Length: 128
Image (cartoon, rainbow, N blue to C red; front, side, top):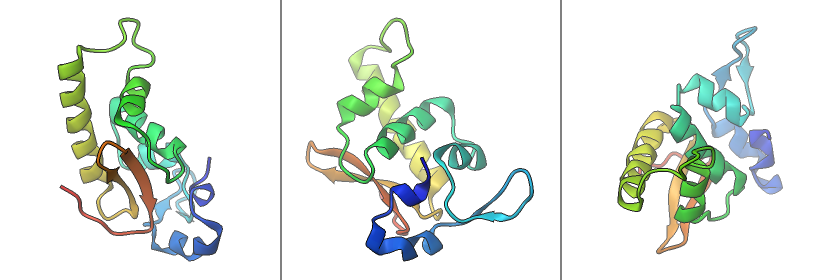
């Protein structure tokens, strides 16, 4: 799925605000990078990539923390770590992901109390 699919139609100008990354093959700027290109360019760890993918699939709508955590450990035959450790690891992965994406124009923000998280594009934000 391309980044342009996540942007609302009326805000196509936001694509210009997203930091363009170079194509790994030819070096030309990619105006609307895919999720895989973002993961590769910013060297996002596999677990953080699963977190980003879960939020990316929400297309700007809130995604619950439980759904994100389920996606992070979907391929673990044991279902992932115990709940307390899983939440800590989720929080650390979210912090790490936000730090790596800072200034890129791609971000993850809180969607509200108990609503989860959502993807934002073309907006410079810094969330703690």
